[in-house]
Image (cartoon, rainbow, N blue to C red; front, side):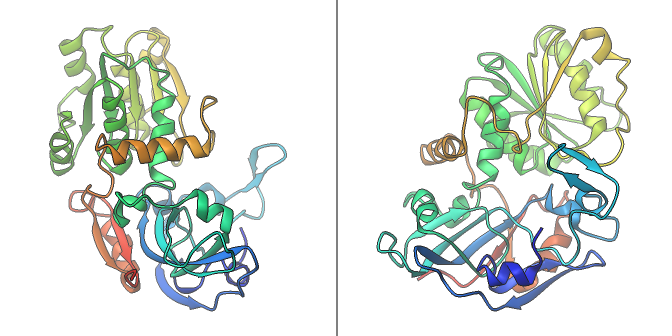
Length: 357
C-alpha cells in the first residue's frame, strides 16, 4: 500500500484525513493534495462512513487484519511470512460521497455529485471518466450515496452467490449489522421470506422495522433447532453469514437443509473457533462458498453491481441512508471508531465534512 505522502502527491487524499497510527489509535491529520492533472476532477467529500467490519480489523492494539502480519503474494495468491503488506499509518475507507469542486475536464461540471469508494479524506481526485460513471442520482441522499460505491455492491454480490435458490422460500441472514440488513433486504426483494438472526435486540428491532422476521440468538436458544422446527429439516435452502464469527458460521451450517448453501459474507479473523466440521457440515453435505466482494460473481460486474444498488434504493426496495447511523464531524473520527466497539448502542458511524453548496 502506498505511503500517505505518496497518496497525497497523487491527489488521492488531501485536507482533513483520517488515519490509523501505529498504536492502533485514530487521528485526523492534514495533507496538502497534489496538483490536479488534465482530464481529472477534484472532489470534496460530504459524507464518508466507517466499515464496521474490515476497517475495524485495523483498529486498536489487537488489530487482526492479515495484511498487518503477513505479505500477500499476488503472483501465487497466497499470504506468506515476512515483511507485512501494510504498515501504519494507514488511511482507509471505501464508503464516500462528495461534490466536484474543481474540474480539468469539459465533460464534468463543478457541482456534480458523485459517489465512490475513496478514503476518509476531505479532498480526493479521480479521472473524469470515473466521475461520470459515478454520478449520484438526484433522488438519493448523501447518506444513500456513501453506500452506492461499495457497501451496496458488497451485498448485491453476496445475494448473487445464493444462485437464486432462496427465491420463494425461507432464507436466513446471520447478523443485523449494516451488511446483514442490506443483504436481507435484497434477498427479500428477490422473493425470499427472510429471517434475521442476531444477539442484539436493538438491531433485531431495526430488522423488524424493515419488514423482516427475526430470531434472537439469546443464551440457551438453539437457533438451528428453532428454525428447523418451524420450516422442517429441508425448508431452508440458503443462509448468508454476515457476522464474521466462525461460531455463527457453524450455526449457519446447522440451519441450512441437506446439501444446502451457506454464503460466507463476513470477514473471518484468526482461527476457526467453534467451527465443528465433523458435525452437520459432514453429515448433511453442506456447500459453503465465499461471497466476498474481492471475487465478483461470474454473472456480474462492478458497474452492474452499482446499477442494481441504485435501482433497489431508488425504487424504495431497500433502505441505505435511512439505516440508523451516528454522524460526527471528521475531526471526531476517533470517537466514531470507538463507538463501533459498542454494537448494542451503535449500528454504524459516518463522518461529516463541509456541507456541499
